[in-house]
Length: 194
Image (tube, rainbow, N blue to C red; front, side, top):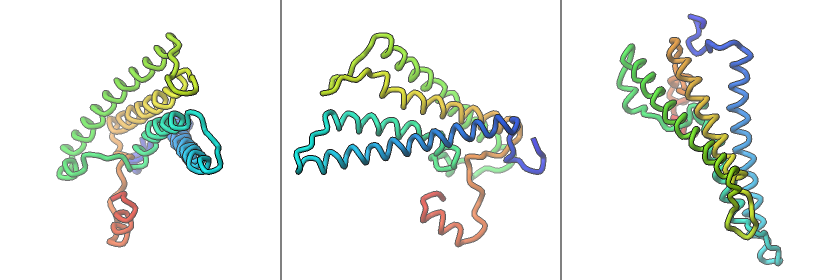
């Protein structure tokens, strides 16, 4: 790791680009599912007056919502937009802050690995037992469950990536640098990213 840049990754450049690309692709997929929700809901709303019925539209919209929420987590985390314990952590500095950041990230990584494991297990079990949805259109449940499982796995990877970065002396990359001016602070508050 470069001593001059504490935000630099200890991983080789190709691995860093691959991981950052994974988080970005996950965010883009979340956006695509959000667009799918829009299209489904628009079809349901606009279709009623003209007699167009979208079978199981509510089911598909809810599955897209779950995929959007989970696939967007890793990108949100790495962009510094995920809710953190800033009120507590910001009271510390130096070694104490570093230890708290590492402890919080380690707890988060352990929790995400746990949830990712069981999300993948749920998908596997649904596939193995050929679970079918109860809606108008029968869909194998492992298909809509994939969005949640993939999102949890990518978030677990992001947490482990950040934990390794912190353990090797890096500063948190999920934390935005302090604003340099009052205008920048106001702009961040307006963007809800303070």
